Image (tube, rainbow over all chains, first blue to last red; front, side, top):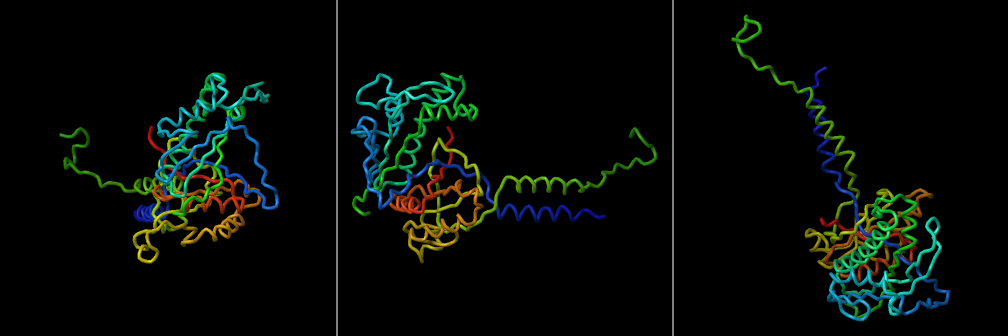
Length: 184
Length: 156
């Protein structure tokens, strides 16, 4: 059989696939939205102690306010880390609650919650940059924890241990209800 | 001169066999078939997703639905202007259409997989958060709570 045309046919197919498909995998920051509060249910404010919350605000000029002071994005990670770890048991920083984690034992889990608020005019880029810093802070704390206890980075642990680390250092980022400030 | 066969001294280059060519091309073809995925919709908005260093990979591509937000492509700007718009499937939509879109996407997935459905928000880095917030609120209303902010990985 004459096979000289097989190459041409294969080339055609190849070209077809090159045109119609896209390369590369999807990457991104994964989040879980809070469920919509029920209309009938009475909105009861969850009593969260003030010291357990850090509010990160981004205004329409992409400036960041963490807690009560304006901050640069490069400092945000360290601020969040300090907030979540609270190494000196500062009474202004979040309290810790000793929880019994299955497979690990008691560990003082921080009750800190990061609340992220943005303006309608905030640019998406700035928003993602802040989200990224928050995740980075948590990832670094998890890495530290994993190194101390398992001598491995978080990403290299098996699933069971990852769950333990996740329980010890939860990712509590709350995206607050949007506030209508100055429609555009 | 030549070591073998003194009979024909003519130096002759044999014709190149192209039989392996098709194998090579087929190999290339399979490589592309495996590593790429079909482009299901045509982009009508320009999206340059922002960069982030802590991105994670999406586990199940087939359970993903996309919401594109960005400026219409130049060919469409005469008709739709340059303001950021939402694209669902193949056309421009408003936030009110998200409910139907999510319902349709949910129906297309198998029952067991529905809870793992992820909505990927592919927004341009220059859009304002207002429109993204509207989309997020609408998603919460349809209880599609697993979302993903599309981002590129930065090199560091």
